[in-house]
Length: 474
Image (cartoon, rainbow, N blue to C red):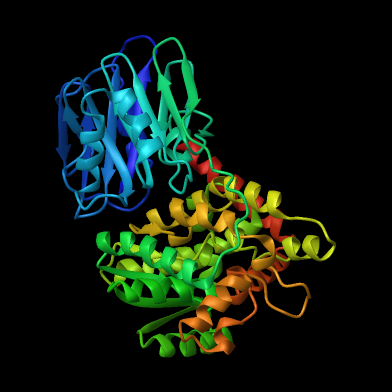
């Protein structure tokens, strides 16, 4: 896992300076190595300095994880490639397995990867005359593309494209993009399924969670969990623990929050170590620019949500881990939001809303969280986004997800499963509280903005504009 960049010069001129500028803009943290490749050769270096590549179509990587094998970019046959992410259907190294899928025919291989392989990833490759890239059909790991008068490029984040005066467009989940000198085309290879509602049981849900979580566990024998003590992080931790992952839990937020005690009680039940990572209002203000730089937009809600991910991923890295898990995705999949419940109680069906929210989570949630964690040298994995679990969750009838009164908690089947797994009912039925509120961050940000005589949206917008001004000056 790391950062991907690829650039094609429209005039057939050398694009190495463009590519290096993009890699240097990827994040402020140092790289373990950099890689660069044309379609014939690949080179790695400890610094963003290369001597042997001066071609019009180039692929590059900023590598941040020590366990990355084989070194990337990988050159094979008539192309070079980079794979970022995880393949859950193999015990081989992810990049090697992906490369084997693409070995005989690059474009066909990327389509096969998206259609048939299970995982969470982006992949990019260069041939003599083109850049070809794609992402899985859930889309937890972002890829952006765009062009200016001289080049067309793709990159892991917007900053990399901004650095070469390109306005970024996100590649949609399940899409493949092909860039040649004269034009850029995208094609939809796979979309989210629409399974018919089928009554289920907690035993079936248990089997599905056990099986899908085991696939993550095989690849991550050691990891942390962003842990609130709520039903989502509880179940993620429980099933990873069942599959023998060596876990440490992390709760993070503003000091003296009552949710600390809830998280500690839940961790005690699991008999897992919980790290309480608290921060002051002053630290919230000091960290704001870093948060906005990672999420790459001024949205105040996304900003508040990103803080716990920033702090937890930073703590994960300090603990010597490279992988962090989160329960994100469960609220969409199992109807955790109040708006679903209100619609259901009004005798309307929120199933279509749930489907649309899952389909759009890549842009609403996943890109924000993945980029925030990656900027702290941490890989984020989301078990509730496993394609098989999503297919199962979409098939669960709405009356097994939502109660028929406002007093009972939402995500019925998840809570029922938790009690069947021996989790105390007090923990299993704990009401949902969004991370930006349970951590105390949202209230703190509002106070900071108020001191400046602004609303929170005005304040985050002002900070974003200042960051962009500095960025453009560079």
